[in-house]
Amino acid sequence: MRIIIISIHSLALDYLKDSFNDSQLKRVTLITDKLTDELKKFLKLKNIKYLTTKNLTIKTIEKIDIKNNLVLSAGSPWIFSKELIKKLGKNFYNVHQSPLPSMRGSVVSYIILYDIRAFQTCLHKVTPGIDTGNIVYRKSFIIPSNLKLPNEINVFLQVKNREMLKEFLNSYNKNKLIDEKQNNFFSSYNKRLNSKVNGWIDWSMDVDDLDRFIRAYGDPYGGANTFLSDAIVKIENIEKSKNEPARHPEEIGNVLRKFQNYIVVSVNGGSLYIKKILINKKNIIDSIKSGDKFYTKLKYLDDKNH
Image (cartoon, rainbow, N blue to C red; front, side):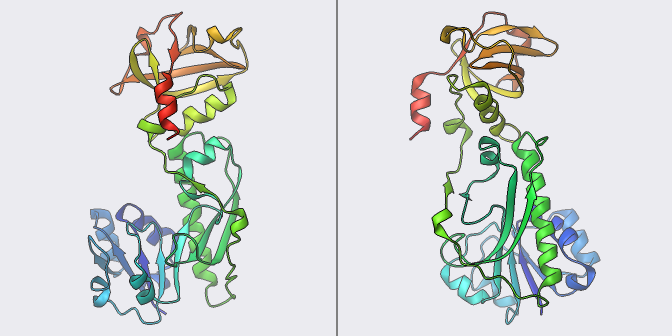
């Protein structure tokens, strides 16, 4: 059986290298949006067939023999139409980095916000309903607590996705697929987050919630938003402490002092040690003084809930 893998150019090379052995690569056709130099070099080295296209349509795939193929979507840059799903056949599966039906939609920042450790990625049948097809394979793992930022967690999840796909390919046709219908009693959907809209800090949160919220908008999202005097600033690179909590609501957000390369800010239940306060991507931490105060205007807190 031949294999078609549909993957965006930024992920395709890692999937080909990490999830497929040489025997499987001889049967692979890659469909992607464009080629990087490194990807092109690997395709030539392994003699892998490929198709590049800006739009994936039925007409596009007429150039490929798709009959009885195993078709895998692994970070596809396209959403598949009903007609395309039907054309690609019954052996069409998608890599999804959450334990469906839980956490449909956005994933990485919510892992930080919800402080999740036990997690799964899965493969499911591609159906017209987004992420609703039957589950055919799962991989369970623990998310290490030392992964603090969205980019770190995303890199980790991508590795687990590729490990899962490798396990699936090595067992395909040897073991019966689980073909498990998703139980929508456990379904949930996480809205896509936009730092400019959703990333405003509510300083009334306690120190643990503030820590998770600010980290959820860290690399690569540019930081969480707040005000210092009348200037909008972004906060990144933080550590939390249970020491020196605010003694009164009026003290919340106050800069207590500088310590090492950090400033210490008093909050509910503890304090935050902040290393980056950015205006137009420039760190202004050296200009911060004891007694300065961070706050967020109510308008921005109200708007993010819309």
